[in-house]
Image (cartoon, rainbow, N blue to C red; front, side, top):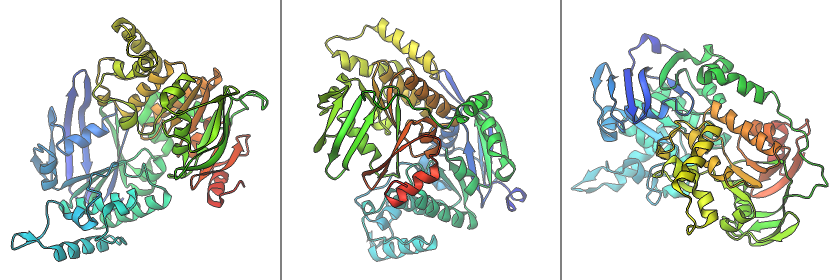
Length: 511
């Protein structure tokens, strides 16, 4: 790292403590952020990363400790005060107005005025200058929704830097970006770093952390584990510090990245799709999934992975093609119909399409089973408690309180709640769409081991992930998608590599 250590930190926290009912989220945490650096905040889900960010941005008020900005103790009572103090945050979900122009989004609430009216030419001129300063090729007069999510994030960063140019917090900004978009984002981050902006970067992609970050702070179980120069901490040591005793579990899982055939080729598939398609969403595709088999779907964002899966669950209607379940014709027009055939679906959007944040862990777990029984046959409270506690223990959901609101759980534990909901219905086919996205390494290892066990017990699994190593680790066969077409079906026989899958995606044909 350059000369940051010789400078005064722009932001410090000393002994920060934050407690929720039954959960000590931050326990005396210290943290430093210097001007002109990219600093990673690392830790498992539940380690306290999100809580610390919310304390820094005024969403939460700490229960102890102090925040020091530019050498002065400050009390940040809300996001607006944080912005006025020089701290801005850009989240994974862009919080802008898509129907307004890029320029309007950059200056919304701060528009230059003349004679009491918005000075439109000045607004566009200043917006164009800000965009040009970061070497971005964006038409500031175009509607924001005419650009990709990646560009919208860059617009959010332009706005954040113009509002307050001291500290920029980027919370999982790359989760929905492809490689080229990540490179563009990193170019902007480096430019801002060189201008003296202090950047706090949160990501679960370790390679990205080592590519862009100068230093890192690691939290574990709400406490500070340590602060390190990125160049001096090996990835395996980072993992060990993040997950502690769970490292052996992860290494055990990672040691086996090739799968033996789940069932003989002649075994009757649980599900067979022939020419299944939805106009404008996914081109006709064929797919078979046998009992005890994990079939992976790989492809870039927008390749059609999710669209293919939604047809199999009846979440979207197919416009052509047919499906057979255990050798018999099946009609999958609704999720209820799919559930009746023994199909379960964990959506990639667990917060909007999966969990109900205002309900408890218990209430979320029993939702699918109650829906399958019908609301005229309600589960007794005693039965609900029994089911919830059994699956909380089985999946090690933390905290182990069935009455905790699910919105207060970490991402990894929320994912476990969603898995528990479907596993209690005893499905024959489990569709998992990005089940480990945005969760920590320890929880990721647990979920991968669970998927392997379920398949070993005879369950069929359709596994979708943007992480090719993860797909290879778990899948018996891999379907590769590109431009909403299934372009190849590859056996995971020991010769399949991430490079071969990427070549298939790039060429659009089996390599």
